[in-house]
Amino acid sequence: MELPKVAVAGCGAWGKNLIRNFYQLNVLDAVCDVSDFRLDEIRRDYPEIKVSNDFEKVLTDPEIKAVVIATPSDTHFDLALRSLKANKHVYIEKPMARDVKHAVELNELATSKNLILMVGHLLLYHPAVNCLKALIASGELGELLFIRSDRMNFNMGRRDWSVLWDLAPHDISMMSYLLDTDDIDVNRVGGWDTLNDGLVDVAYLDLSFSLNSKVIPGQIRNSWIDPQKLVRLTVNGSLKSAILNDAQSENKLALHSLTKEGRMVVEYPVYSDSEPLHLECEHFVKCLITGDRPRTDANNAYLVVNILAEVENRLTKRPFQKIKVVKSR
Image 1: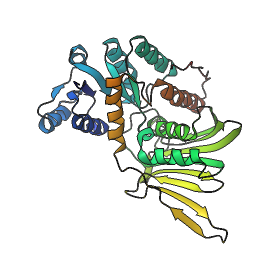
Image 2: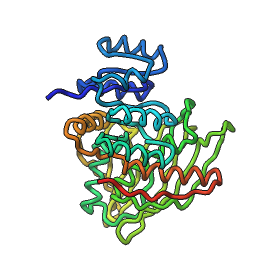
Image 3: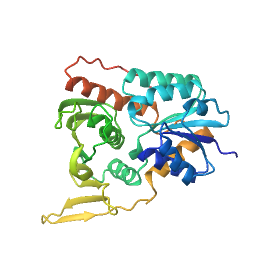
């Protein structure tokens, strides 16, 4: 079977990771970026790959079947819309759009054209996350009591309106996936512009996850000004608590429990060491071949964009009207 040819738009720090993985999957055909300096690096590292600073050349190339969008988030909607109109399948980095109406529009267009539209919510392909999801579903942790995600680093190359648009999509999509619910309410929001540059760089969300008849409280904490990188998820259960520390090189997932004598026991579940991004890219290629709907489709993206749009309006004191989305099947 002939493999589909893919173009990557955007070869910044994350775009280079996508380029590497799609190249390893033997589907990378072209790379597009506005920076000639970045394109020179691609020419040097991948001499057989086509490069261009003209996105229209990608869209009009009949050999290219799919476009991977790894550009700043305020360009996602426009580039994805143009790609779908050009009958290209689309993989778009998170967030899918900055407005839920745009997310709906992209999904409706992709559906009407029978095109794949996949969103890069990386953690849903992470082996440790999927191991934890199976443990939660099996009852290993007991009754769920609380869930919290801390995602912090030091970032001066900031393009998004706030740290939440940059980091929280990972947290929201992962927590919803782990708890298997999209019934989420935002209870409280806090954000600070510590550098007085108009960008919220430290923020938190208090959330409620409705799961069957139970409501599980949760919290997300994000920061762009923390000198020590922290990527940690904590899930507290009545029997065991799980900590997923993705900043560690090994033993990322640990289960903590107390014996009757009050002694702490730590277990380290076994899971695949495959690179999450490679699994995600591989999934996209498989969907291109089979026509299957991606795990992280537009339905998954609606939730993230809807919550972040509500948060943005709360932080700026603007009225917000939540859009009820009818999910595609």
